[in-house]
Length: 324
Image 1 (spheres, rainbow, N blue to C red):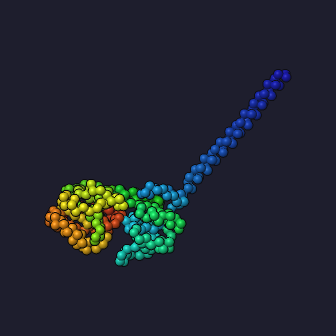
Image 2: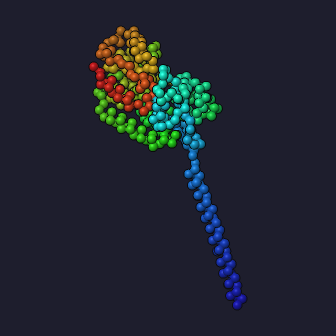
Image 3: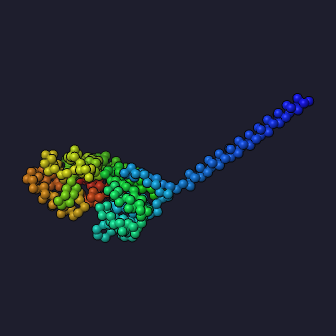
């Protein structure tokens, strides 16, 4: 009997230990489940946004920015196309479009108006990489800077996607990107015959040659043109451009010369031709003899055209098609 009682006691002890273990496992399971649930809830309530801009810089916001300003007309065009409310825009000459009248002017990429930017006090400022020297000043004012670029159609498409991600407009951004891609494909399906072309960017007294890694150079390539300056050494400060070498230009004899400028087109054209005529061989170029020296529209080529990049490509194609 004593032996049976001992066995019974051992069995009871094992049963109690087993029950305790099961309870502990249940408690652990509940804890694990609670932790997973809490983690899932944290994920669903996380409103932070992280984007990588065109300089490779990662910028984080606690939530979708509610105010934005930009120094670029092209970026302004893309923001408005996405239905994003803009608080500050580039300063323009002459009266603005009626739909822009209520947006404060904050200067331009070369002359930002920091007083006006401070008044607008945007959460995010959209700017070109050349603005980076002022970034610390913006941060002290509580404004983060996101940098964009427009040296190719691909850059513009990427910027549209960046804005979509930053301002919770990804669906709208994808629609615009697809539309541009379809239009570009349609426009380049029937390229113009290769025309030897010189792209000149500048103002009276200051001229540079646009290289293939510039937006106008990229558009020329897409349109089927041949950039005679494709192997010119680029400027250190302006890697999308090269110094204008009259000797090389005369040697390569372009069939078309396209001028890109912010200023008065006819004045720029006259000043450029006057400058070039200092070399007697200039007037013997095929482009000059045939009258194929044109000024491209400044709103499409003198600045980032934004969503109008397809229109710029069409103008480029049409111009090449008119070579006599």
